[in-house]
Amino acid sequence: MPLADRFDGFLVDLDGVVWIGREPVPGAAEALRALREAGKPIVFVTNNPGKHPAAYAKRLSRMGVGVVPEQIVTAGMVAARLASEADVAAGRTVGAFVIGMPALEEMVTEAGARLLERDVAQEADVVVVSGHRGFDYRELLAAKRALDRGAALVATSRDPTMPYPGGELPGTGAVLAAVETASGRRAEIAGKPERHLFEIATQALARSFSGNGDEKEQANWRVAMVGDRISSDIAGGRAAGLETILVLSGTTSPEQAAAADPAPDFVLEDLSGLLA
Ligand SMILES: [Mg+2]
Image (cartoon, rainbow, N blue to C red; front, side):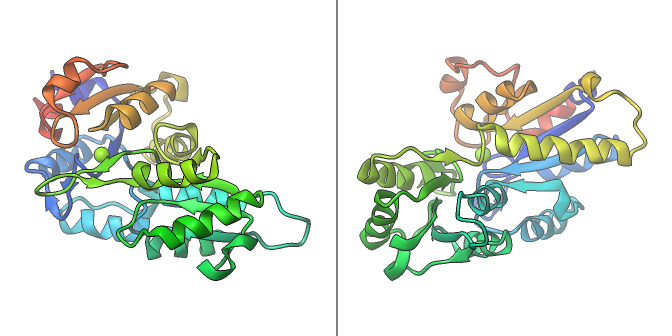
């Protein structure tokens, strides 16, 4: 029996699982299509806030995996939501200083916060951190000033690296370490392995189940988290009460998988192993 048949639905990570940078992981699109044809709901979950869910949906559709943006949950969306909930006086709009890519800034604005430029960042109610290639000392200083004055600190993840063709890139965790070190503060994490992203993703999956007319009680669903990073995908999936499947197509070596704590329930070379 293929491994996929043990499960009613899946949360599937993107970077290192479906693609690496701009390159699709071989076999991933075929495996995802087969899951869809077998009627297995999938919600994609990513700590990468580099694009809007609609852009990820479009990219998946170009790979032949038709999804709607509601089936994609990014740490950027969740971080934007957390930022918009920062504590401010009644009637005031949350002021946010964002270290991150333009898409993250847009999501923070769409969530209802007002973006602050670097030169007035000290007025921020919240600092939102995510890795981006333009990160520099002036951003770090502006974030520190805001945090020293009591701004809240939200980050998309602590992932130290990001899988990329030709070798990993420094990830959000590396940038966040600089901000936390300079400020002496500790961030609230929006993405995996923390609960916020998993709560939204499992709700989205629940809507897929009801959309399928599946009357099964939620408590009886068998849902697997499929990802390539132990510290976010496997630890987070486990904490959310899901079964966990580690794929070796991304950031984790076979040696690291064998020594993983927590240990995943299953280890596969890549997504196509779900159908074997
Ligand atoms: Mg990944």
